[in-house]
Each structure stands twice: as C-alpha cells, then as structure tokens.
Length: 206
Image (cartoon, rainbow, N blue to C red; front, side, top):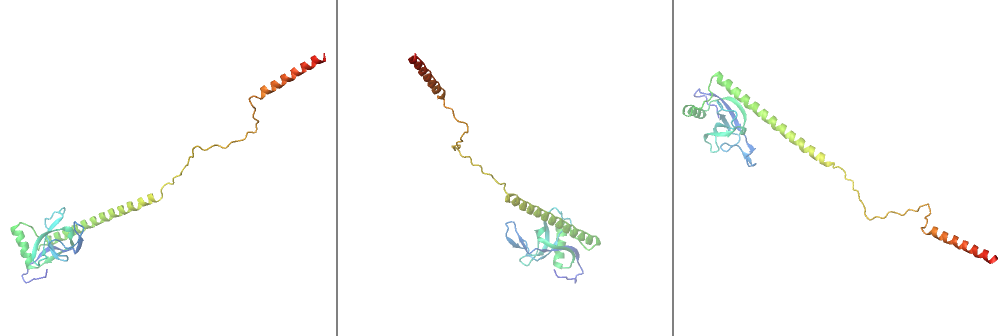
C-alpha cells in the first residue's frame, strides 16, 4: 500500500500482515491464507467487530494480484497496528462497503484514532493471554510425562518362595533306648523256667 497523498484523503485504519508459514487443519505446512499469500499487507475491518469471532474481513491484494475483500482467521494475521491509509483503491473500496453494505469503518477523527489504538491493544492482550495459556498447558503436560516414567522405573521387588513337596524329613536318632514290646514276656518266661528247675532239684535230693 503505497502512500498517495495527491487526493488529500486518508483514513485511520488497522493493518496487519498475513503470516507466511503455518500448519493448516490437515497438519500440512501452508503459506498465507486461502486468498492472500504470506507477507501481504491487509486492512482489517475491525470497527464493530465481535472479538469472539474467529474470522475478520480484510482488504488486500490477493494471489491473483487483484484488490479483494475476504474473511481471514484472525490468527493468520500478525504485526497488527494502526496507521493512516492513503491508497485510493482501498479508500474507494471502504467507501463502497460503508455505503452499499452498511459496514462501518474508521475515519479521520481523533475518536477514530483512539478506537484503532484500543482495538490493537485488545487484540495484543488477547493473544498474550492465549500464548500464556498454551505455554502453561504444554508445561503441565510435560510434567505429567516425566513423572509417570519415574514411577515405573523402580518396580517393587518380588520375592519368589519355592515350596518343594514330597520332601522326606531327615531321621533323628533318639538318645533314649527303644523298648521292645515283647521284652517283658521273655523275662517272665525265663523266670518261670528257673523256678521249675529249682523244684526238680529239691525233689531229687529228697
């Protein structure tokens, strides 16, 4: 947008630059937007724009070299700032939008200048908050990814207990002698024999 002051006409506008390289919805690396190549200067139709919207109307030179109006995602525009615009083609297009489509734009008043400055300030603060939220989310996800492996690196030790079945117990020798069950009967039998022998001996002497 070259400065052309031959008509003495200008407007306070909010301008920005289309980003060059970014990832699209499919994850592919893309240059610029669908209509405008990366690095294109565009004029933002920000007066009365709802900041909750994701796209905004802009005027700029499209990929075919023609001055065009299109809606671009607000995140595709960087270096947003306020500036006086003198380009006759852009000013004529703004007049058409105001008259035919009832689209408000900023003009030359001091209030218009203050509104453009406030618009840029709000956009800048919104982007700073968004970047801070994204950085905090990425930090929390990194912490969770580092904690989980630490817990799994030191598993509890398992103690294997082997129980062997059918294992014979060792025989133990007892210090006390074993008494046979029939030992008392043998002793009684011997004593009876001795008594009988003494009786026979007495009878023979008599």
